[in-house]
Length: 408
Image (cartoon, rainbow, N blue to C red; front, side, top):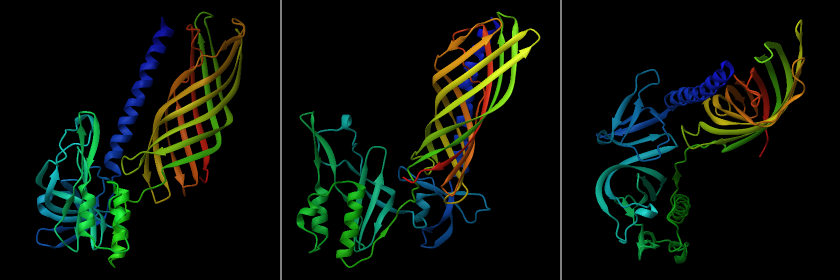
């Protein structure tokens, strides 16, 4: 009963380790490197206060934000009623306005049959997308995204748009924003058809407002959050430190095979996710492992040969040291689907194991100059023999991988 209990315990420990490690690194990441970046706010008296703003990459328009006068002081929270505007320099800017906010939803299965926006006055922080003679603003809520316009300093006006149902089936749109823009902006170089073919998306409207400002003889300032590469592909050599111990309870024997080193190759795809200011990434790779052990003792001998192909996958959280260099922590699982393990001893003859297995994977590393990735990964309990339950195998691997980013 000892071996099944140990296997049961290990299976649960694997899950617990992954959960604890994820909670540890990603809850820490939620607070540790949501960067305080240079910025300012305008108070109700019109005074500009410079300092540092916690850039949390807002997915919805905020009602407050965290501010430090200097990086050494404690942060304080500033609320919408105390601030006219704030900006993370050249990246994100919000202005406070009392405007009509459309409370209707854009979710397909919650649409109604009215083409009229469900407007209510509300005081909000509008995100500045383009600033110029013609300025474009964005408001993201839990139920929709709407855009606003101001021309030559005029009152900020909602660009009217609404999705609605016809006969409880087909979906139509109220595209009144196209008429609004046509009436607001007089520009001979922009064809009339352009106004009435505009899509209600940020990218389309952003480009259009920049073009309009050029036509109006005005410069445009576009606020863009600096985005890093969305993915990386890496390949490189992998050095694996192997430690193996087998207890064969039926044979009343144990084999301490000691430690060895092996070399293999690995490849990895790193895909950045839109969380924690793009510091979180999903990774998936493929790696090859091959080793051979022999054990000789007074009571007999044993040998094991192993070849496998594994697919490690998980989540990675980066801590940027500079624009192109970063530390990272990661956790996940490694699935071994090409498991060819051969074991023999003076008690057993040529046992072959091909059952796929999965294991805990935790690790850390560093990326240097967006070129070289050096990482150390640990798989605390890597199991090969899943069929023969009387054999308890204790294998630990620690790998050092140096990979190079491919120039895609």
